[in-house]
Image 1 (tube, rainbow, N blue to C red):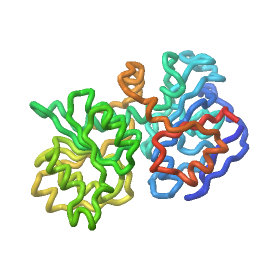
Image 2: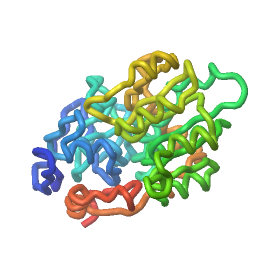
Image 3: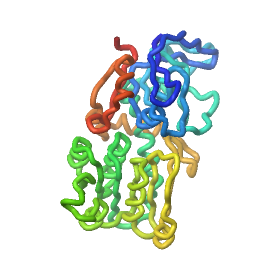
Amino acid sequence: MRALIFPEPWVVKLIDVDIPKPGPDEVLAEIRSVGICGSDVGIFEGNHWIIAHEPGGHGHETGAIAVEVGKNINEISEGDHLARMGQGYAEYTTHVNVVGHGKDELTGALPIVRNDLSMDQISFADAVGCAINCYERAEFERIEGEKKAIVFGLGPIGLILTQLLLNNGVEVATSEPYHHKRDLAQKWGAKVFNPNDFSRPTQANERVVDQIKKEFGEADAVFEMVGINETLLDAIKLIKPGFRVIVFGAQKMQYIPYVDCRKKGVELVYPEAMVNSKLHKDYWDDALDLIASKVLDLKSLITKRITLEEAVDAFKYYDREKWIKIIVEPQRK
């Protein structure tokens, strides 16, 4: 079979390897759809803590079909649509992505069968689960009256999170430099701000954080979805005293302004990916059920579809300005 491999930072290769043989407690799945996640790009660029050198890489946003089922498995049949398969930048895989993102995985776990969903829909489950986790860790149920949130960064998870917030009656402001992402959030009902509008010749020393504070005010929850220290500092400036900044953007190291956080009594919360350790739960079923409800606009997030061959250059020249979600279709030649 063909597969991508990521042997070191800034290197991705398309290779031929043997199709994995499923054991008696495993499923061999044919990968039909795998979304390029920001964590995959970070792994390729070498600035993410995850290391994924096996064929198929970290590829975890997968929609797959069971093609061979181990003799000890009764819950899955050939032809079933499968969620939570991993190492998905390959034509086939036996790897199960239970939690991922550096957390110990549950041994013996099986993929989830969802024959009611398409391959594309299933491939969004990981991103939707992460967005649900971010939303729940904000604990809006503690807040009385009108609720306000600010989202820094409108990548796929930021855009899904924005929809979740709006669908639950939360007033939302967003900060995002790329217009096509702002346009989606604005269409759904969020207030949008462009940090690139602020330059010395036009705005002196005023920044986007000042405009958000002036036009929207402080928020009950601020979500840092970028992974840049400057946006984390802005999030801390915009949170109401005693409330939560949800830090989801991936960084290896962060600078936290102790005095500012101490004076405001800021709570910094770091959600894991598909698991909420505070509640001892994961979000696979919640995410798949939410996708099945069709209340989320996921189709608008798909920018283009590519082959495994084309994915090599997609990683090398990843265009954050133009792309939202790239779907790799390993079976397509």
